[in-house]
Every structure is written in structure tokens, then in C-alpha cells.
Length: 315
Image (cartoon, rainbow, N blue to C red; front, side):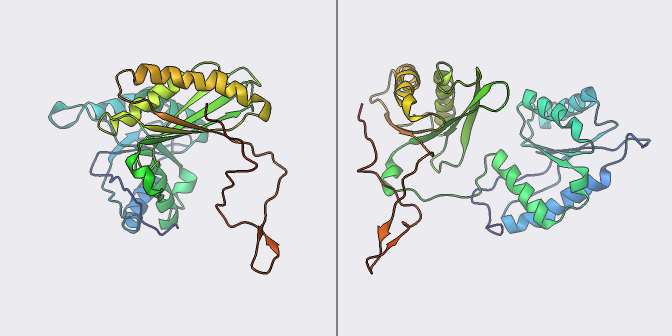
């Protein structure tokens, strides 16, 4: 799998991406030069990109006097964005940071979040031992972050005529609050996703608000990639709720979906279809199939049981 070319590659062409590293005029114990580490990362990218069928050209290099200086990083990044050809504002495809101190990681991620720029951080310890294997793995991550596709799945022919959005919703109760994760596919191959998180009081599993806003934004992103066409079918996998809460999912969460549809599809000729799948992983049932000799064996991979033990509702 590692040697397979990227299915949809997004090239890193000359100076449309940025590499940031510390290279002070007068290095000392606290401010060391990371030029060699950054140079090794870039050269490894250039050597391994051919195997992945992706083009990597020289980035715009930003050298810092002190990687801890938030103002310096911000000003030099803004200077790059404001110095495009013919004075046109340019937004880098991605920023790669070769970082010396791990505790500075949050500073950079917050800055890139502010500018809405995808980013990839490589620690200098890892950079100095960079090789083609590491470089190809990092390039795959970069390609995914800038709307490339590593793999494509083959879907049933019936789905070709549909504009289907696949949605996954789950909740995590670790930490002082419960956090709901929302991810929705935005392309036909279901390989690109819009994601959002919702913070709730500790222990709450049902999303009583904000689901409508998350879905509306996901539909907007989907439409922007489909010539303003809207999804015709939504498949929702809802995890993180128990059997006793399925009715609450329908009465509180599904209602928010319908409210979003009422606004977004108010001028559409037809309303979209919804398939809601409530996922329950805590099961005790086991399934077997009979082999040719009358014995029992495990079902083949990908086996789907859609009748008998499974509840259906056409509400």
C-alpha cells in the first residue's frame, strides 16, 4: 500500500507552499540553526515524490531568528501572502514547519488556524533522520490536508446518479467536557470531508443544538464542489448512543437535520432522502455460515446482515 501512487495528487509547485525553520544570524545554545534539518526534509520530499506521482518544487523559505517569537512568524508569513505576483494576495497551499522545540507546537497551530492555512510540523529530531520512507509518509499526510486523495473506493453503480453525503457523528467523554465529532463527505468519492466539533456538558450524548449549523455548513461546502448542486441523499452513522437513546436521536437530532433542509432546500424541486444508522458496538451475538460440509465457520469479510435481527423504521 505504501508504494501505491496517490489517486488524486495535488502538486506543490514553485513557491505556492511555505517551509519555516529557525536560522538565526548568531546561533547560540537557545537559538540553534535548523537549516540542515529543513534542507534534508525538502530534499527527501524531492526524492520521494516521483514514486507517489506528485510534483514537489521549491517552496518559499521563511527563516526565523527565534521560532518562539510569534510576532516574527506572523509578520514574515503575512509578508509572503501580501507579495504575490502583480500585488495579488496569495494563500499558501500548506506551511511545513521544521520545529526545534515541541512546546512551540501550539503557537504555530493557533497561528495557522487563524489564517485558515493547512500545516504540517516536523520536529528537528525526526527531520535529521529523514529518508524516502518518512518523506513519502509525510507527503501523503500533506496531500490529504490539501484536498488530495490517497485512495478511492468503488461504490455501487446505483450511487453514480445520486449526490450522496456520508455523515459520521460520535461523542467522546474524556476530559472536563463531552465533545461531539461531526464529519461529512463533500465529494463524489467520499474521500474529502468537512468536520466540526461541538462541546457539551460532561456526560451528555444527545446534541440538542448546533447540529443544524454543522449540517448547513457541510451542505454549503458540498455545493461549492458540485456546481451548486445539493446532496440528494444523506447517510448518517450515529455512534456514541445507547439503545435507550435511539428515540432521542430521532426526536432531537434528526429534527435539526429536517430544520436545516427546510431552509437550504426551500426552493428545491425535491427534498433529500435520509438514511439513519444507529451504531451499537456492544453486542454479544455471533454469526456463522454453513460451509459445504455442513460445518460452521465465520462469515466472509464485509458480510452485512440486514434482516431478521435488525430493526427497520421508515418514519
